[in-house]
Each structure stands twice: as C-alpha cells, then as structure tokens.
Figure 1 (cartoon, rainbow, N blue to C red):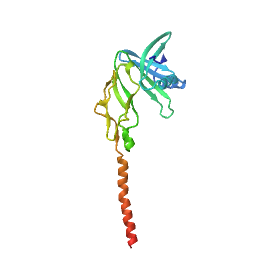
Figure 2: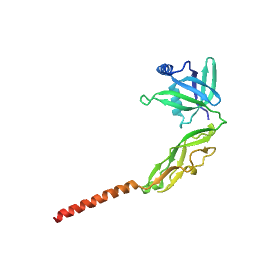
Figure 3: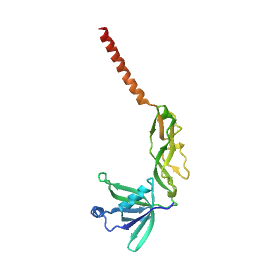
Figure 4: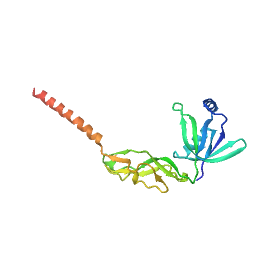
Length: 213
C-alpha cells in the first residue's frame, strides 16, 4: 500500500518565540527523531498534515516524510508520535515525527471497534465496552487500523476478554485477562422498580387509611 507523502523543511531556530512566529505564518513547528537518527527541528504545513491523518483511517498512520534542507531532500518513514492541539481554537500547535524501520517491531495502541448487535440486548441486556484500545506489537506494515470484534452472539452475562482475540502477525501486549466487552442484565431498571414499589405501597396504605377514617 502506497504511503502518503508529507513535505517538511529544516527549521532555523528553536524556542517559543520562533514557534509563535511560524504559527502566525500558518506553519506548524515539528520535530523529527528516532532511536538511530539525529533529532531535527522541522516545519510543516498543518493543513497537509491534518488532511493526511483524516484521510488515512486509524491513528497509526505511516507517512513518507520528505525533509528538505537547502538543495538536498531525504525521505524518512515516520509515525506521528504526538500532536498538540489548542483546546479552544482546535488548531495544531506542534507535531512529533518518530522514525520507524519497516523490519523492526513497534509497540502501538489500536482502537477496538465492536461490530453487530448482541443477542442479549434483544432480551433487555445492555452492552458495555470496558476497553477501547489494545496495546500491540508488530512490524509497521502490519499495524491494523482497528481491531473489529463481532459481539452479535453475546447473550446476557457473556463477555469477550483480551485472551479471546487472535490477530495474525500481531502480538498483544495488554493484560490477557482484561474484559473488553460484556452484556449485563438491566439491573438499573430492576433497581428503579424496586425503589418505586415501596413508595407505591405506602401511598396505597395511606389512601386506604384515609378512606376508613
């Protein structure tokens, strides 16, 4: 599968003042690093980066980062390790690009998607998703965009645990005894009925007493 390409340039100068000026120009300060590479301060187009992340489903997107320094251009395979977003303006503030080697395993978190409507919900049960991500280890090219779990056969009281999941070419790092999803009985509804019933009985007793008087 062809990877998206993102252009970047070496950033001259570092610090908050430089970063503010770059953002004012519509650019995004960033940094490139890895276990066997020199850390480089970069600048990228925030619209191009966000467009790449939105186009590619899932959070672990492999990108061909095209780094330009003067007349020289070099490509690196990277993942976005961190993306800082302004919580009020919803604008990107800074990005961290981590270099990956396609023949070296990486550890990442992958979202869990529940598929189907459980049998138990047809009988009043409630589907609860206890865990929404799994930590896995695999080669970069084998990272799944999501882990899809079919819950349609679950009845009331049934659960899916981490150790029930088998994914080809992927090693699950998360605790294998952890529950991912379960169908629970409608306890809240039963409790509500139990709480109302005594009051209703008490009300009936008062009414009956008044009628006798």
